[in-house]
Length: 218
Length: 241
Image 1 (cartoon, chains in turn cyan, brown):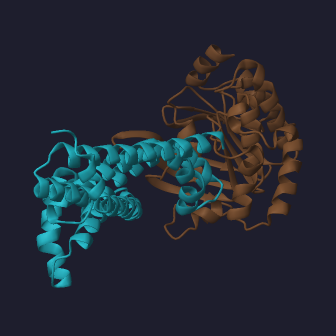
Image 2 (cartoon, chains in turn orange, blue):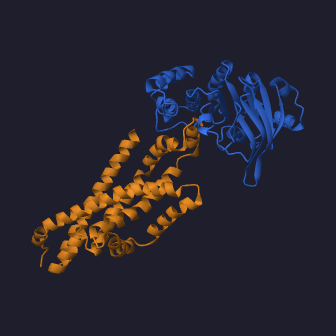
Image 3 (cartoon, helix red, strand yellow):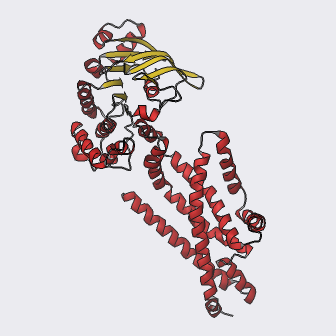
């Protein structure tokens, strides 16, 4: 029996919609995860230990437990509690965003703390407030520095979004498991999505490279 | 009185680096602080604009107690320019942007006006052609002169210099000192921590010798250099002169 391109072709529309969902979940995770991650990183950097403690715990929990377990907790526990019913798409977006935020927060924190103390001192000595120094001096330099590790996090996120197939979110891996179940085929569905994931992550690293280059020349 | 330091003590953990310091600096006075490394002279300077919090005592800038919790430190710092050993220029901005940022964001001065002032200051330090350059493309001496221009752009009433020439190649030192000399001549109130004894002698109205967290001796420069009273001052000067 040869490789059944015809069956892959027949599943084409489903793979396409699965891919769009994968892209959607990834973008949502990147956007919400980055915004939340910034907030969490500032929270963790607060000098008051009591105020920073919740953010430290947040990062500890989401980096210290498996994403898969977090997905199960959010899908079967948290989302039904809030919405009154389960919703795989909502649960997927929440789980990916919360998890991504914990990693992004640590990347941001490392980036901000890697900027020489003298930069803050110079800004403060000119009369700038703490936030002005952050906004005009520290963050612009930190963003340039965190771009490569952020790109790595985004690539991981695209791949990790496959885990939400387990809660029947209609993304690409879920489509592949359905095809596998329908035709008892292994190579066709899984090699197809592996190929598409590869394309997506390559596009992602290309975009990050371009951004890096553009920032470096600035 | 521009700066008044009263019974200042500063500790880092168990380590007390400033032990009961009393200094005052008058308007238009140039005070040079010398002493071996680790004597606390840089810490004293950093306490004066609160880059280091003080452990006890008082620091008054034009009569306002900056150690008071209610003091608006951002406002006070606008009047106290600071120049650092490592320049601390902002590497992601051009020279011009480095200079106009604080006047625009802190003093809310219009861009055109800030720019005009910046060009004027760049002429003063002899680097007007570098307005659009980035700090990375400048030599150490040029960076430090830009840093001085940046501090002056806030039109401070006094300037603190923290070993401004210590990180420079020897041939660059002269240019920076020249700018500082001119500033002193124009009547700027200055506190300068330095190892440049020639500068101390020529420009200083008063020289303070610090050692071990204390002010050991202070006098008018000629007197201090030619006729030191304390043993520790003599020992230090015999090594550096």
